[in-house]
Amino acid sequence: MILSRILLYLLFHILITYCSAFAFAFNVPVVSEIKDMFDDEVKKTSQHIAKGLHEEFKKATDDLFNNKIEPLLDEIDEIIQNRIEHADKIIKKRLHQTETIIKNSMLEIRKGISDFDNVLQKTSININKLRISFKKDVNDIFDRLDKTIDCRVEAVAEKIISDVENIKKSFIPVFPFFKHECYKILDIKEVPERWEYATIYKLQKCKKMNELDNNSSIDTILRAYIDLRALCSRVGCIQRLAGDPATEYFNKEYLELGRKYYIWSTTQK
Image 1 (cartoon, one colour):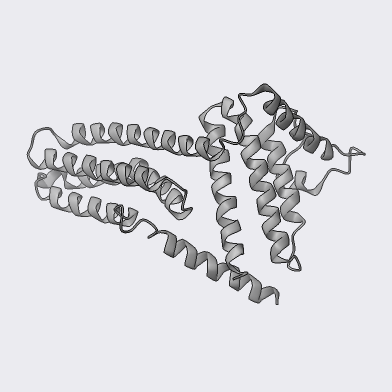
Image 2 (tube, rainbow, N blue to C red):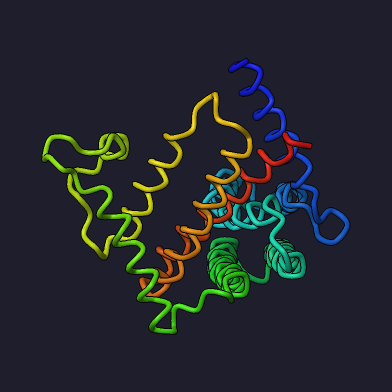
């Protein structure tokens, strides 16, 4: 029973990941196509590089892809896989911009307008700018998704902070040596401060997940993900003031919880 349930979950996860990767196949270039296009452009351009510089060119283009282009594509792919509403136009725009940057750079090298070191350095800068723009796009999408929660309203922010404080209190041990097991699981040494929202959130998520086992009903699992996603949205809302790292963390959590909810929900159909 336990094994079959795990296999069922994994099967649906694989199917959904595979299918959602092509969710916008008719609207935007698939991420894998960008990767293939980059390889083709590099191969074509290498024919115009002096023989003694082939290895240097290969290393430079590998570094560009691994350190700049691939992280951007991974972030775009994550949004594709989660089927975020209103994201298709943004994804189409950013993927086409990525394709254009790559093709123009390689064309510039082939025409000998500038040496490849300078061109690839400029390409790296342009990809960085594009990645920053895409992160802003994603944040804007989440702002629209969370429009029902406006943390700029003092009363709303105070209510969320109060709720988080109550969660924190539930993790204060009655006796010093009887901390909740999630402290050990997450390697958290001390009770978090009232402003350590991410730590409090992680403790609550750990607690919620540990309450589930192989006997938990699908409905119980779905409710756990709904509750955690709601908490993630609320805590993420007040954490936006902490800057990009906090925003990015809670955005990814929100996406992951939604993906897991969808996977489990399909097992009911």
